[in-house]
Image (cartoon, rainbow, N blue to C red; front, side, top):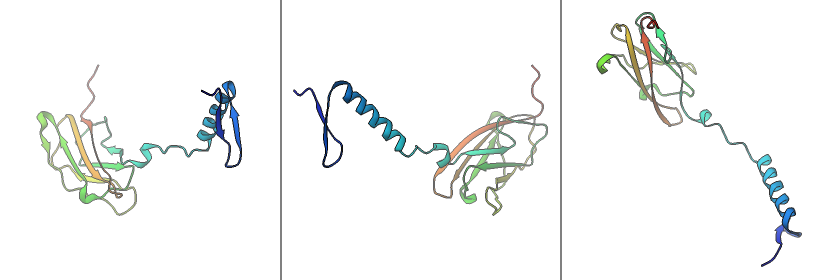
Length: 149
């Protein structure tokens, strides 16, 4: 219909643009919008995750650990935090209840109630952040020397 497009510059002024001028105006508007926009937040900053564990994620310990310790990226509630350790043939290793110190960033700690034999173990955890967001995860660790290659 019309070989031009009207673009509102403000309430009182209009400008007629066509062809290359229109393309340049759209590109400039896009760049200005991107520059003035608030950056998208990092997803990791706002979601609960496991940040550290003892025994370490995918780590190897020489002897059976007496406790498992889990650190999270946010404060968690001990009353709704659970851990389960599984060994060979999905044997569930008995653990004590989760305990935590009152200090910020304290790990969730569970006593391991039996001596772990050499081998690979899977840790399954679930918890609820203080802000109400749930999360769960798994990792493995090995007891005993790494296999020779």
